[in-house]
Image 1 (cartoon, rainbow, N blue to C red):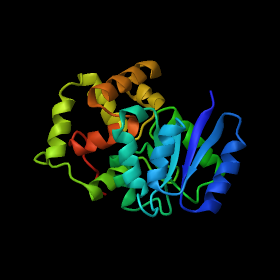
Image 2: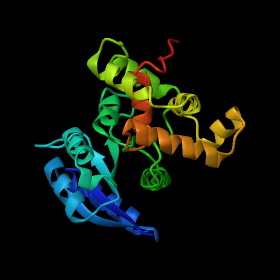
Image 3: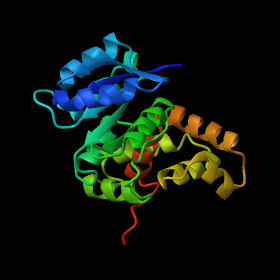
Image 4: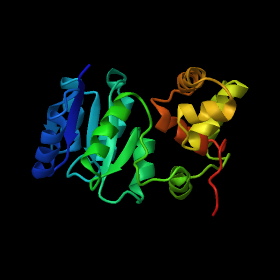
Length: 229
């Protein structure tokens, strides 16, 4: 199946470069180009995109606002957003994940990393860019928000966590640590298929679009606490 990719960036030259790269792959094609967030939302719906490569900083409706619109639209439930950042370690990363992005990638990434990001996002997996270490997302969430149980958002997440089984909570903790299904399977001595089943059930119960959202919920609910180095 061909992955339908939408490019959203206000720099025409960068969009052109991405288009050449994406269209060179037999399993993906660029179905639209947007120069601002509002156009990106419109094209995501009109072109039935699978993955949107979304620049954060754009004039008018920026990438964060556009991602929130896409995530909030039930008709766009299949759309995955990968945020493109100039600096991978900045305050926008946690905002991107909260907005509903499946992950982030630096604009300076290698072509193979970008193509892999599209495939990973299309498969519904969380994308932590190659530069990010497994504990980095915790650091971002610690800087960008609170896991205070008195916070209304955290309280709502905590209430939803009560619907999870003990094993699902255990798997969620491992997902939040940045482990893959195979790594979790080894750690819990179960099959990768069993892990995938638990992950999917946790996503359904918590209303998460993908693994990235599971990570956000795990930290914001206080189920997992950021490590202090």
